[in-house]
Length: 220
Image (cartoon, rainbow, N blue to C red; front, side):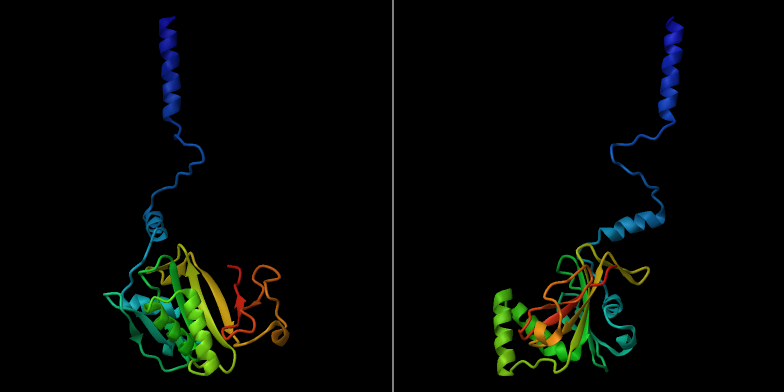
C-alpha cells in the first residue's frame, strides 16, 4: 500500500512539472529581443531626443509635400526652446517637449505663427489658460496679433503614452488630428455642427471667437 501511494505521488508531481504555471488573467509572452525592445519603447516617458531625431519626428506631423523645406523648432541640451532647422516654405513644425508628460509634435501653416508665438511667450510668463485666452483675444481684436486671413491648418500627433521609435523612424501610441483655424467662424457661416455627429466627424470649436477652428480626428 505504501509503495502504491509513493508511486501515485510521483505521477502527480511529474504531471505538474510538465505544465506551465499561470496566474489568473496572466499572459506569458516569449522575451525575444523584439519583445523586450517593444516593452522598453512602450514605457518611454519624457523621451529625450537629439536634434536630428527631433527634426525627424516633428516633420511627421506635417504633410509629406512640405517636409523638406519646413522650419523646425525643438529643444537644446539644457531644455531651451530653439530653432533646430530654418525653413523656406509656409510650414512650421515643433518637436516634442521632453519636460512635459506624454508626446506631442505639431506642424502648422506659417500664418498661425503670431498666435502660436504669443501663446509660447505667455506660457513662459506663467499665465494661466484663462489669462492667455483673454490676452490673445484682446490683441486679436486690436490688430496687435495678426490672424490668418484664410483657413489655416495645424496638424498634431499626440498621445499620453506616445513616443518616437528611433529604430523605425515612426511615431507610436499616438493619434493624429487636424485643426483648421477660421477666425470668427460660426455654425451659420460654415454649416458645421458644434459637436461631432459621430466618431471622426468634423465639428466647430470656439465658434465666433478669434481662435475658432474645425476639429477633425480620424479613426486610427
